[in-house]
Length: 426
Image 1 (cartoon, rainbow, N blue to C red):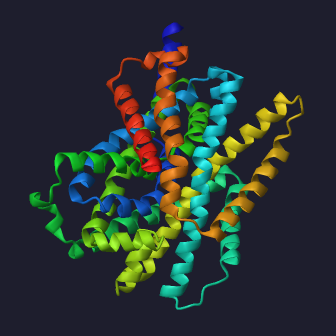
Image 2: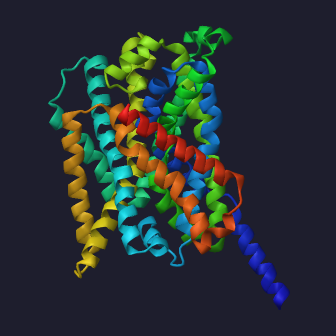
Image 3: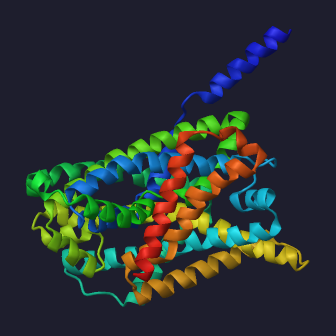
């Protein structure tokens, strides 16, 4: 009888561990969350540093992305209460006061990125209308509210629709990104690949150091990790961590391959002066390429890729921002002894998000400035440092102690934070 039970259990475990269409959907959703404004602006900041620092960044970003996001997924899955989101897990492990603080930080790590997407999508569509379609600019306030309401309507409809729309968007996005990367190869200027352009060791180290925060932002999909981990816990139970790690590994490989090929192709086909101009114009790299090249292919498809990338990434980041704001409001109501009505909190979050994204998109602040100053330190703290701290302090996480990857993640998190602080004060 015991043998039969064990064999049934083993068969069940094997069935759960098999790769499924739902796993592929999650890979695409994680990829889509990362491939947004950060990726489309990554060639600008990273490329201005030259070829050799960019090559070093490529070697670092794959392990950084996988190990850091795996650590955060393990943290969410470490809860004794199945189905807990990240704000609840933080309170469970670190107490109510720390829970409020980290939930606040979590919200402010993701919320600025949601604002960035409001700016990015408005600029992308406006540039496309003016430069490719030959239309006059719409009033910025009107254009931004139409685009924001369109994206928000998908999120209000629910997580299932969001996953379907993301999957629908990401397949063509991957194909077009790859095609555009290959299409730009004849434009490559390989003079920067020469060893004579290699910077001194000191300049190389400083360049790499100050660019790491942009790398962290560009490959960041932490806002969707909580919802992703909850879904794995529901579907796979005790095998959730194993399945989550496999999905995260494939997502990291996909990001590294497609995105860095695209970044190298853009950087090698543009001069440092071109990249500086794109930064000054506050445009995504594809919008700048569309304006620079006479090719109808790039002119029309470039802005479409930028649009799709921003929309797919907006969905994942909105999930995290909503989770953070809902957690903040809920915790505040509980501490005040008031009843928590989740539906009313959701309604408040929707109104707040629409109003503030619209306001910032209308004002049009510098996107790269927002990336570098608003979310960076907190993203690095929550994604890199908090799970590594939990490995040593939380009993349920101590089984992960002693891994070399823990040292690597902690070190990269500290480097990212130090570079951001340096950029803010010097």
